[in-house]
Amino acid sequence: MIVTRFGSLRTAARRLAGRGHPVTYGLIALCAIVFLLGPVSGFTTAYGTGERLVAAQYAYYDRWGVIPAELFRGRAEEALTPLTALFVHGGWLHLLGNLLFLHVFGGMLEERMGPVRYLLFYLGCGYLALLGYAAAFADSAQPLVGASGAISAVLGAFLHVLPKARVTTLLPFLLFLPVRVPAWVVLPFWAALQWIAARRGGEGPGVAYLAHLIGFALGFLYAWTRSGSLRVRTPATATEGDSKP
Image (cartoon, rainbow, N blue to C red; front, top):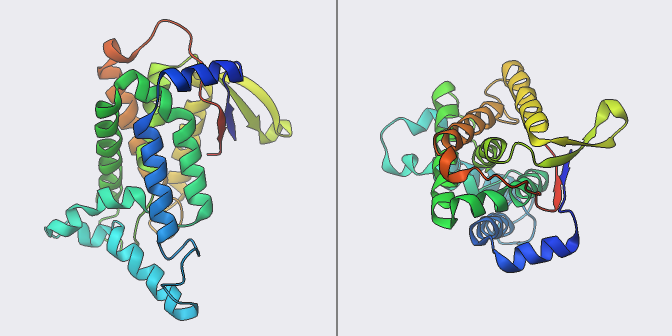
């Protein structure tokens, strides 16, 4: 688990009052609304119960998620699924984990990039991350959903733009004691865990670690190529919140 904090609530209030994060909060709201209105949240009875509900969930993922075996057949509607899949999630933990990461790391990156460029960056890297995963498992019929590829790109860019931001990390091998370390330590460690998991995983149900790695690499490379306009010289503090990889 990663926890990043402002130095004080007063600092947080000044930052939020002076600079909003409309794209970050808009993405969070949109993902939440899409999930709540879908058949997985349990907030609507329109999809029925029992076997009918399960069938609706499968149809929902097939319609809006990325199916690698279908993606490269040249149909226009399939070409849009790496975009629509960014707003679909597989359950409450999937949703909340992703949105927490986006809340923690996305706001400051939006400040550096500006809302329009940040939105294009988020959507573009998310699209390419899912596309890369689909190309690696081109014969898979398993739907792929979630914003993890795009949010991983945010983490990669954050690493380059704000490598010295202090991050409080709860380490299991230290009995989950909080340890404050810079982002340049925590985020590469997170990426290494994704690499190990990707090598052990496959194309079946579960977490698409390869999409995480692709997104992370894309985000870092983008920030590196635009370092002159994104890097800041003054130390920065991260957004208040928790995140769990």
